[in-house]
Image (cartoon, rainbow, N blue to C red; front, top):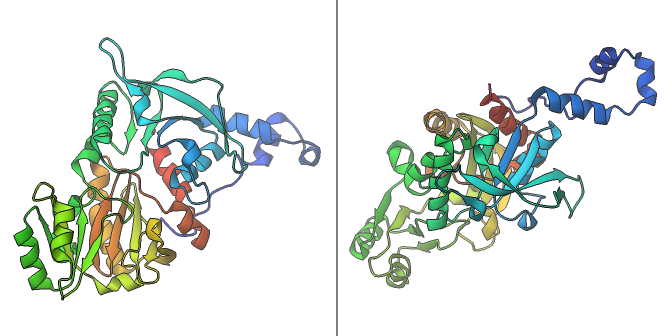
Length: 361
């Protein structure tokens, strides 16, 4: 996979189609072949794709990764449908179905899609691919949705990322499988354990296991100011587990998001750099995204973990790396496609749809 991998922005070669139609090249100046090109492409390799996602009206299309996937798939002539997790249902004697909305893309903003007048009942197994793109948190309803999606797999559906793999790889805890890449880390419900960890490391980060976008992350420095209150807030008197990690000063250079598609790393990471007095680099928390080539250490981490998780059914993952240390493995709805593409020209959405198309062969 290379940064400058070419991807055609048209539906195909005009010359080849002109020859097929028996027309001369001079005729092309007077013919608008776009509709014919799209028709030929769709007949050749069109896939029916179902995106399970948040409401489309909530998308910020200038940066939304699911939108980037849809746009690239639509450009190639694939058919797009959407539903939300609460639209999925199963009944004895039937297959897993959803209230599905077929959409077309308009190329405009803010009305970037046009929906079919009515929803329809669609069996998930009848789609070529079902893309689970519901944003975290991974709550009970997300958990239940993965079970419905797994039943759909038993009926013949192809789901990405695979639902069992989503359940088996909680984003904070998945790093425990690769201790050689992580810094000092503790997972516990015990307030005493956290205090001992702080005494040993002196500068720590505490975060809930079900957080997203930097929510609920606290830093406690050597003075231990507010440590007791923070522990009470996060562990709820011992009822909830907390992840505690040694503070990594390299966060000043950014919390890098490394995307891995089909087991192969995208050549660029997005370093999310904290702004002002903020300790969090998350874009949702005001971090500044700066794309940069992968370092040798970044590649080592990605090339070790990527193939393993791809073999487990995770077509797309996002590794979070601070300095030389892995901090999280994002599997539910990894982002940053558009930021990397806009800054480097590396078409991440095209790489993803390439990988998705390869699963159909």
